[in-house]
Length: 259
Image (cartoon, one colour):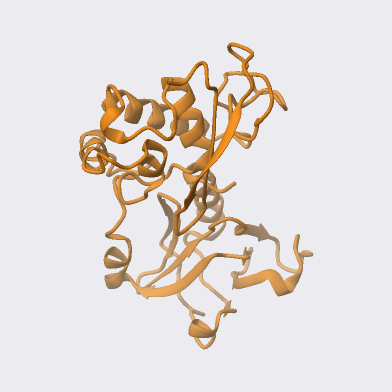
């Protein structure tokens, strides 16, 4: 499931493949930008901003969001694509690499001058240079009557956490995801732990919150409804807090370890 760490790694791979290179061909396969042609543009950098990814040239920014199914892949020129061509939303070719965005939930081409406005709604980026724990806590606290899981998922409060991290974070802090923000003790500690978790995982292929990097042992509660809690043996429960604009607010918790 794409979260801030997934996008961070994708941006690093794309930066390594594209930065400093010139586009030989660009193919935007979404109606609004089907006629856009960035051939001849040189890539300055590729960066992540929370769950958003930006491929920057001097004049343009290719802005994408993976949402639930999206993925960026890089192949050598002429190499077979890892997914069917009809799933591609954009193809970016340079002399040495082809970057393909498959099933992207959002794709747009912005003037560099318009990039900041497109992302101004985002809170501090957990993996970014603008990270501010104080600002994240302030924004979360302003949502005092919101369930804490919903508030942590809201990218306007802090950018980068998704369902996996939020559920694991709530378990590790011993709080049920349904509790209101106002009832959560030591909100700064929740934010600090959330950042430690995502920073620890930003360079890993497999997300680990238990400290055990082994298949089937990496997570405490997420996706484990009906299974025994790794800490106390109580059955993990599952609930649904509705939907955000990007993903389901599905929650998992231990009724004994989380209050």
